[in-house]
Image (cartoon, rainbow, N blue to C red):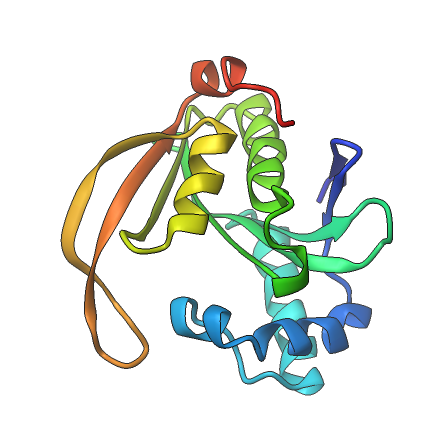
Length: 182
């Protein structure tokens, strides 16, 4: 797993020492409502880190810890999962801890991860998010992704509610033409 940085965020492999911070992040109600994450305990986080590292080692995904470059604190997760080498694409996913939101960590980490993926030969990064998740929509557009459509009743929440989801795509030329972060 390569470590990547733009000077504001660092993407690095998750480590067992991240468990307490992961448990704290997973206790956020917004993250729990929109993502499938383990129970917010250090033991569950250590087990999750082992599974993530195994998926990374098997070439099934690239899952990084998003780290604040200035403080070294764990800020979230950036994943390119469902890697399909035959079709040369991956699915982007992320979550960011509440105290790091609004600082473009999701968008910055997406650009770093996508640049890595494109350098490895992938030609598309795909993402989906609920139509009411304005923060995620903003971060994907800021990273250079393009809105490609809306899937009706596509995502079923942990509580069983069916939600519409927007579909976004990022190609190498989209990344090359993305506006600089301010």
